[in-house]
Length: 336
Image (cartoon, rainbow, N blue to C red; front, side, top):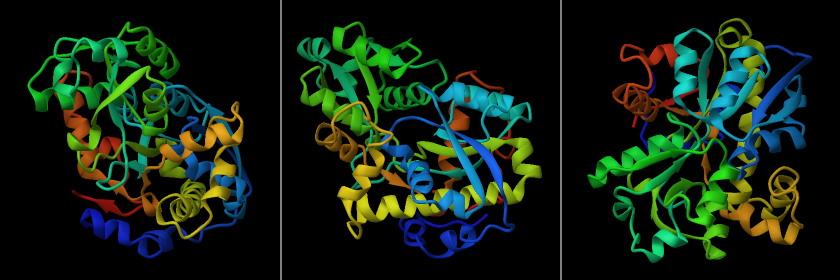
């Protein structure tokens, strides 16, 4: 395992990590199905598809869209999709323990200096005195499912603040948004491209940053079936190659400013807020800009922390080792 610090890992962009994935080991002509959410943070896949990087890698990619993380893990295990980018969940870990799934890379990460996920209070809760995350003590905190990334983020914050939360599973992001607007739940955490427009409308209030409680959080990972990881190495390397090139383009435009942000927003708009006019969608797309790891580098320290939390909560078996969940042979790793 290669250990590098956070800034050192990011400095590898276009270098060692990207170079390792630049050329697939074998020319392929394969159709693969890729799971995605309609978030700016999934843009690595969208850019790779639109700019032909998957095709260059010998892959014909078909997207299948989901509304939560755990159903994507089930779809990987069942063979309905081949690759996906989403958060680690209890369901994903349990499927990995059964030999069905492997995490093979990293995607979205929290990074100081780049706006990240927000803790929110409903307008009703805010008016009742919830001004900081600590004020959510004893309140209803929305999650998609028990054992979801929302559950992890809320629990880490609660532990840091020494408070208890009433976790309320609502299954889908859209349902949570409705419940926040109506005051049926009091708090939530979500990516900025959803948080900021909601706050701007007055429906919710931003009361904190996830990065303040979970620095260097590996929010989403790239994963596939254990079968693909073990037996379809050329196809898997090809997928990571295309995905990594898409991430590089996204980063150049949305974070580094070395490529056209307008062109990138146009591309992303085909997938994110596509039901809105471009001029109304653009601010939300831009607000969703967060760090996507160069070369799909994987923060194994963060993954281990998440695994340990799931184990401490009794959501997964206590004896699952990290290597049952992660295959570190495909990308560079970060251990911080």
